[in-house]
Picture 1 (cartoon, rainbow, N blue to C red):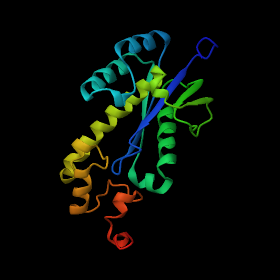
Picture 2 (cartoon, rainbow, N blue to C red; picture 1 turned 60 degrees about the vertical axis):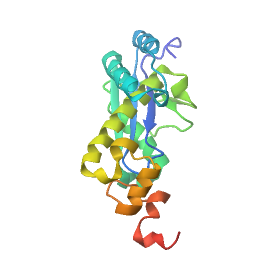
Picture 3 (tube, helix red, strand yellow; picture 1 turned 180 degrees about the vertical axis):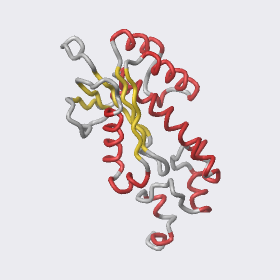
Length: 202
């Protein structure tokens, strides 16, 4: 895109779609040619392939090197209202709107377009082939993990500091024991099954 004259390209990715608690978080990252080369050389890759310590170190590098970084957050109540796909796309749109540079083009991880008026390309497995998407995946993952650790202080019984809202066996057991909290996604099956008004249906 740079070679074709596109000046400002933002990579987008989200984390938390598979969780049953907590928000879905997206990030938008704008890199220049120099910062992209630096971050690629430093090992910026899909956040899921990195250890927590490595993600955190690279996240700091991304924020130092990028031309612009922004995050979008959509909380469980809105996830339940919109559905998780639309909530994920909204989180990306919020992240794009938060950039200090208006992108000329978006590179979006996955196969869906973001609801905004900026030209965009959806890239399946984009976090594995685009350094700006990979950088966005790292920023979103670190931001969301830190957010879930803060939420864990208010809801220690669900072990959010460990499971980050994913449906681990320990999380499901805690959900069955303690019931549904205000940060659980009530439209998701494992949560619905623990709600008294739906329990008899399963």
